[in-house]
Length: 436
Image (cartoon, rainbow, N blue to C red; front, side, top):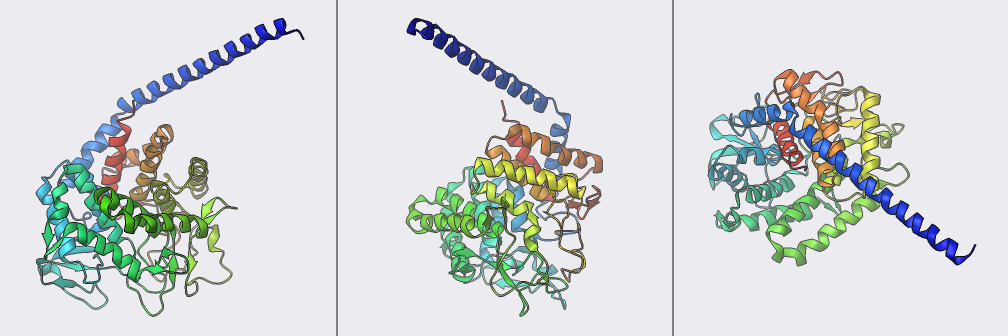
């Protein structure tokens, strides 16, 4: 073909390509406008937002049926609380956690007024310190997320209020910033496994706080099977990112640790063949029968937090969302807040509440489904986030409450005013409304 014939053809192809690109941009722009209008006109969003603000006006305890202020809950509703309360009251709760901090840096789970801290056989072992005169604490020792939850909560408090000076306030003669760092030192000194370079705790179901070897399951025992999971380590990465933003002068110490944890999570916990995180690396054996293939279980909550921590690529995020959708369909659940799928078999946990599709063994928790929505929004998946948020919004309205969890049949269970659920939905709504 002659050159004078090729040149016009090339021009035509370029013109067509430019035209296609313009059409694609136009289509995307129109779709974006359409989604933005749909979000703006969605009456359930405004109603759930209003209900969330109302429920947090009742105080800082986790919900009806709970006396305690829990740090893992407070971490997920402090942004909501900041819309209702003055910063001094928000800060008051944070100070209690720091006053109850152990000498080794550990952070309690929750606190209650000392007058209510009555020890009972088989109940909590209450914690008292010389610098906290009003409240007593208790610590679920199977968990490894209290310290990281407190660091994240302080970060959200500072970002919400602008109260950077809080970091230099002294509690018992030690600044808040130093106490935050001390809590992370506790994790490195008491919960760090040298072989894998990752944090560990007791065996639990995904992000749960119940070990299999005891009827209650909230304390480490001689029978505990220690394990490494993605949730604890993803929470640590987020906490380190938060801390280093507040205290950049500490990068030389903590940034290498952060990078090492992130690398080791993907090296040891990510299953390339199955595009998922394995449930556990066991350090002293598994509590489950040898014939049980635990790696068939997909952990929704830990995966959501891992996405928030920036551990997965865009392709891995999309595969993870697809797997969550498939699990919801197979299980019959109604939201991607489904804890895990398939469930642990009946009798795997001595705690009778951990039956298949009960509580943390396959219950449907908005508290963590909402975090998956936040993770999707963080990486620009607005359409997918809105689609998967809707079922959670709808059941708040249908049941007139922010229930703790739901059965696969979408029946509400637990506290009807669970502030953790209200908090994550409020945060998701706040971010979704910014979509323009």
